[in-house]
Length: 225
Length: 223
Image: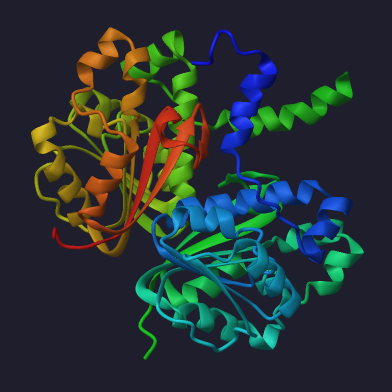
């Protein structure tokens, strides 16, 4: 309860004192995105929130974390977070803003690499940038970093939305998935695959070809011998 | 006008062959007194059907008049609806009848003859006596094949203060999100929790979810 005698200015000062004087400066990717297409941050964060809720209190590896924009949300629910990206500058920005006791970042081309045995792997907006001939290697990398009962949350734009994509998006997209192909790719490494669709910030299970974005949740690794 | 009529007539002709669907006492009551309820329930079934996928044998416990069971049968390939109430099962059998669906009047707490790839139940577990709740979840896990999936839906305990007296009398076993997750984890390798408000399924703040949906994957023996 606020003090009756305090005016609004004093009440607000009390709130302000509880907020730390931290300053966060975004890296070039997210500075660019926020200046040119700010709504992008909203739907990107909502996919991270969905992933965070799905994996809950686990050790999380993010493959393709870029500047760590999803790190605070993933780390809020995780017991430990490791982010990996091949973009050194992006990792520098991530380190500067988000590294902590529970969160660390590695600059590395993660294909065929092992970073440990994690309970969950999150990888959003990555597989569409992996050349088709490296695709198996990408999914095998996810498997190689998971415990047998681990969970993977993999997101990518739906191939059916490509006709509306910006030239910049299109230039980077070398391997687009539709719902069925994502289900098959995850089905090769996991016994169980749950497919979700997104339009803007909303996750749902609606008609697959009309989902703007796809998230596949895989769990229970198949025997890889 | 005549031209529109000539386009519409063949459509009418196509629909003519359909066997009429006749709701029983339960859905008829819902239609007259709380028609939105059917919408919520169907949305939970649709959510389940989409997660289960198109090639599974699904068991629907507490199937009522089988409307949701029919959706599971159409979306997943086969569904077996089970309910304690013989009148409900009679209505279900009359309305929904082909190779993809089966109904039986049975007590789910007794052992089953078959294994399923998926088991669902909506608005059932809150009616199970608390001392039978463990057996109910065990029954779900035991009804599944090795990598089977179970989907449980129940109103959130936090909604109890807004529910009607008649509802509260029947709800003897209300769950919070935390309790449902913990009890499902006793028998499933992974448990994913969702909430629903109206027909919208989401992953928002658990105490404010009107309805809870737990997805359990891959049963394991009780620890």
